[in-house]
Length: 250
Length: 250
Image (tube, rainbow over all chains, first blue to last red; front, side, top):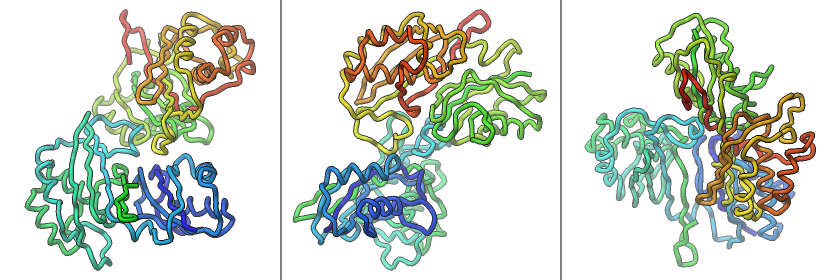
């Protein structure tokens, strides 16, 4: 049977979501825990990868097992294995038609920038930005990401055939010196949000313009936009699925 | 000449403040950085030790050097060495009569307990408490710590001659499911705040009473109060000095 899990994690303790040969990853931690608990080799499929240092508030994954577990106890024992840097928020049985990656309708990422004095207790959770920013310029640029564009220049992954993505939310709220960027789209490629945020910050600094942003939708590769905001400010916030004829947020 | 520094740090990255033979400590990190920058062996004196996992918002230390440095540049270069898990908030030249530990008039510690659902992004910064608590009972118990008492039972350090301490603030505020304990006193011994908080939580759970708390001031050793709240909820918040005939907070 198939189980779906929703989990949060502190990305600063992992070399990204995806299993690698040696390094500690979220996928490896989960698969090792599940394989030990269920006493069979378990492979998980995540809604998407997150890079080293990137956090998740509601990442989604699924896995198959022959064993039927009572859900509450299953969540508890799995958390005993993966806490404190990963936390399983929910676990449920799902139909075999559910696929954590393929069924994704849209994803939400948030990115946090602090304009306040550096705080070592938040070093892994915010991007501390020390140069002056014109927030109004950033607010003016944000809607230009909305709609359907070719983001070929906004990813390091040059093997992708289809680099067209649709963004339906591109917003910034500012409170207590913290900038919270909020993006919802049908898909985000490798490094895409971090490149978008880096470009927006450059626009806020007056180093780039909205015209640059528009021209970058015609960039043929990543080298034309060599900017990248650091990983620790980025959070996979929500994964949206359309299930059973209704949209559910997880 | 003598320099005084005020610093904050994320205790989860260090085996406590005090230099140990091998392990990574705040003292070692600072001394290594300063010795490299100043090209002479530098020893620092902290206002007090913090245990492994315990954080500081305003720790204070001093050190002596033959070299005179411009203060702004000194702070910047020192931060380049010790960031991101330690941050030097200020550096100033002080009179040789200043001693970061001996001149302490009082210290403030805060301890944070979360009653909310576990969050892996805050695992190192709060104590997540999952059992029911009667906050009113804790509020009633807090003033019993005020005044001068023998805290012999509240420390693991059994070599201390004088275990009498005076507490002038013992308060709790609760907001958004977070309990913030605030203690100010003329001194806190090894583990003392963590034992106090553990006892208060037990009183909130109904496992101990105010009468127990009062009787513990007559405890002859730590074994009579075998409770200890975990390190990650504890913050050295402020160190207070009386200098030049006026009280200054750093």
